[in-house]
Structures are given as C-alpha cells and as structure tokens.
Length: 317
Image (cartoon, rainbow, N blue to C red; front, top):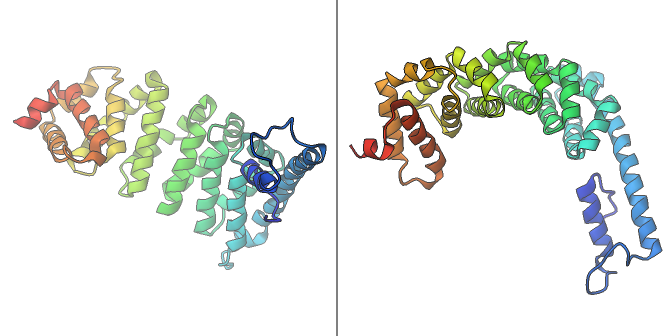
C-alpha cells in the first residue's frame, strides 16, 4: 500500500479500500461493523486530509505569487504549472473551491493570468473554469473581483491557446449566474462572443457556439433577441453556406431560431437560397454517417423552420 496521503475524497476512498482489503472478512462491510481502532484511524485520516489540503493551498499560493511567475526571463515554469494542476484536483469539490478563495487563492490565480508565460496564462484560465463550474459562490466572487474583464481581454488579444481557455472560463462563470451575465453584457461580452464565433480557430468557434446556445436556452426571452439584433443568425448561416459549420454551429442557429422574437429573423434567412442549398447538401452527405446524426438533425430542423420544407422531400429532389 502506498504511504502517500490522499489529497481528495477520491484518493481517500482508494486509500481506505487498500487499507481494509486484506482485513475485511467475506461479506458486506459496514461502518457499524468496524472495530474502534479502525474507526479512529479513518477519522484521523479525514482530519488530516482537510488540514493537508489547506496547507497545500498555502504552499501553492506562495509558488504562484513568486517573482519567478512574472519574470519573462524564467523559462522553466514547471513548478507553477504543477501546483496549478494540483489545485485543480483539490477544488473539484465545491467546499474546497470555496476554501481556496478564503485563503487568498484567487489573487494567486490572477497572478498567473497576468504572467508573460503563455502556458501559465492558459492553465490559470483553465483553473478558473474548474473553480466556477456549478459553483455560485466562486462565480459571484470571480465576477466581483473583475475576472470577467481580464478573461475578456485575453479572449480579445491573447494567443489562440489562451483564448480557448479564457472563453471556457467565461462560459463556466456565466452559466446559471445572473450577476455574472449582467457584468458580461456590460463589458462588451456579447460582441466579443460573436467575434469568437467567427474565428478561424476551430476550438474557439465551437466553444463560442456552445456558450451562445446555453445562454439562449437558459434565458430565451433575454438572449435570443440580443443575439438576433446583432445579426448573429446571419453570421451562423454564413458559416453553413461557406462549409465552415459544425455540430455546435448548427445547434446554435437552431436554438436561436427556436426562439424568434420577431418575424425579421426568419425573413432575413428565408430568401437565402444558398442557405437552403447548403442545408440540403449537408443533409444528403451526412445521411449514412452515424457520427454526424445530431448535426444532420439540426440541419433538417433549420430547413423546416426557415423554409417550411419537408427535409426528406427536399433531399430526394
């Protein structure tokens, strides 16, 4: 059995399983059947686990806030990257993510986002996505502390690698958070999202399409008219016509068209014969491709919504 202490709940369960494997008698093992010595041991491990993680947070913060992280002449950032990965493991539990904030962890993450080293900026942005996903506490504090504006700047001007990570972090902060969405809209977030949507970086395009779909699905009366007023339906349809589409783009256009706030959105597209031809072409080409079934279904639904066409009849012509 390894002497390494577990760093999270998953590690603790594995640790306990190894410890008890040889001692357990055949049959079910329950907490009630444990002898006092084993119960005391497990209680101590649980206590040590909590103390260890906080200590590790403190040590990690010291590494991430060291001058080396901000020094562009220091090419070896292996230690900082390692502790960022360790923090990701620990903050998978909501309580641990909250604890990381309370011990000053967000300031350390901010330090990585401002680092001259691309790898640290990308990994720091990815850590933000882990901290904020399905975590209202962290979403609120990241918004309050100005992380959205910093990530939006990265999305606008950084390298493609960092842009992709920054957009994913923005997505995790925004979803199911009214406070974050309000701040995002007030910081030119929608226009920057549409710009990412039209990017020639495939991963950026995919993540932008997904976020737009998620926001519309979450609050259709708010976000459908917002994106329609920006002409996003025309830009998405243009991607389809230029054969630069993918499943996420198709889903985004379908989601937008499923919540039209006025007839102009559909009218803008219904006269576009090139869109109709492209939809039919894609449906035909994907007919026997099982991996493209969902994307093909989106094209069929778009064809029906915009052109009121029976996709099967249109394809057979």
